[in-house]
Length: 70
Image (cartoon, rainbow, N blue to C red; front, top):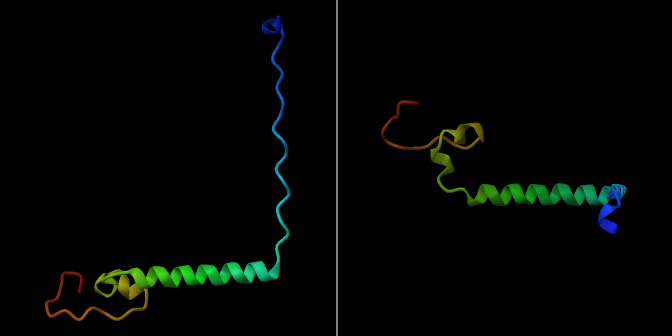
């Protein structure tokens, strides 16, 4: 007659402690992050012809016709 017994609740186990940070790991993570950002910038197509190009420090587009935005 186990269906008459109250159900017991067991709490989940506590989370494991965070790993200790290492200076080498932090440097490696920063290098990987920088590399990923550079790869994404290389994949952009036509980034110099967008309005955002000025904010990124890239050159202005060299089109012959002016646009409404200048």
